[in-house]
Image (cartoon, rainbow, N blue to C red):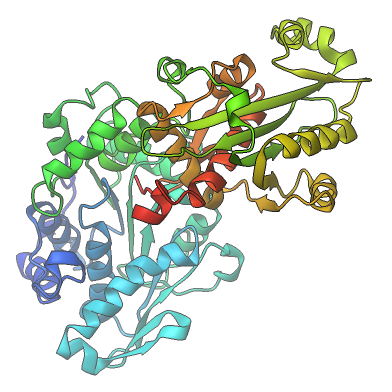
Length: 527
C-alpha cells in the first residue's frame, strides 16, 4: 500500500498553499546530517513534500489545521528520522505557537534520542536557528528563545507525563512500544489546551499484532480504503501487502519511495540474496526493508542446509585440540546440554561441534510417551546420557566435564548466568575458565547470526547428531527493533538447550580464533 488519504469532500476544509509553502520552506532551509548528504540542503523528496503540504496546509474554516494526528509507516533508510526531526523543529520554531511543548517519544530514551540528535545537528548547521536556540543537552532539550518553546526527549515511563501541555509529539518507531501506556498519556487530553496540536507518528512495520501500533495501523488502512472516516487523522503507508510477492523488485519500489535516492537498489539486492535462504533474515528483510507486518517468531534453521553439514567427526583426532564450551543446564527434570566447539585449524577446516546431553533415567519412558521424542533410542545409541534417579545428577555432569578436560584443551566454558551458578563455581574450582553469558539480544544475536552463516556456507561439522538436530529444528527466532535476534524460548516449546549451548560455545570460539575471527575482522553483522 502506498496511498495517501484525501481530505473528506463533505468537510468545509481548504488547502492553504501559503501555509503549506511556509512549512516546506522552513524544512528546505535545513541541512542533511548523515553520510554523503551531510551539509546539503534538505530538499524534500516528492513523498515527503506531499506529507508536509497536506498536514500543514489543510485548514479548517477557523483557520487551524485539520489534521492533528499523522501516521507515517515506511521502511528503514527512507529518510524517516530526518523528516521527523525537521517536523519537530518546525513545530518548535516555525509554527508561531508561544510556549510550545514538543516532545520526542519512543520505546526508550536512547531510541527517542535518535531523532533529537538529528535535530541538534540540523540546528548546528543553520546559523539563524543556532542564534535563537539554547540547547540543554543534559536534559535532551532544545529551547527556542523567541517563543519560549522547547523540544524535549521523553522515554516510556508514562506515569511521569501527566500534566503536559502538548503542542507536538514525535513518536518514533511506534511499533516498538512495549504497551499503550505512553501513547495514551501523550495523545489523550494532553493537547486540549492547544488550538492545533500535532501527533506525528512515524514507524516501520512491526511484528506484534496485539500492539498499539497494529491498532493504529489498522485504523490507517481502514481510512485509506474508505472503510472508516476520521477527518483529523492523516495516514500514509508505504509497504507491501500480505499477499504481495516479496521477491519481486517492482514491489520493492512500491514499498520504498526513496529507493535509488537515499538507498541504492544494489544494497537491497545484496540484503535480499542474504535473506532468501534464511527464514529469520527473510522476516527482517520483509519487515524492515519492505514494511510488511510479519510474525515475531519464525522457525529458524533450514534443516536441509543443516543436514548438509553432517560431516563425519573423528573424536580421536580431536584429542588435545583447543576448544570452547557452552553449558545450558535445564531444570532438574529436563535435558541438560554441554557442547564443545573446535575452531578451524586453517582456512580449509571447519568449526567442529561435539555435543553431550543428559536426562534423568527414570523419566525417559514418560517423556517418550508424553513428547513423542525417541529419548530411549538416543539413550541406547549413546546420543544422550542418563543419570540415576528422576532428577538430573549435576555431580555426574561435573565429573564428566572434568574427564573431558583431560582429553580436550577446553579454553573456556560459557554458561547461562541464571541457570548454572553453583556448577560454574565447582567447574572453576576444577581449574576451568568459566564465562557468564547473557541470554538477551546483545549477547545472543551475533553468534546466532554467525551460526546461520556458517551453516549456509557449510563451514561447520556436527556429525549428524540426532538430539542436536531435533533441537535446532525446534528453534523459533525473535527480533528486536534494531534487527537483533535470539531464540524465543516461549515459542520454542520443545527443547533447544543443545542449540543454545552451541551458540554460546561458538561465540567464544570465534572471538578467540585468530585465523577467521569474523568479529575481529569485520565486526558484528547488522542485518
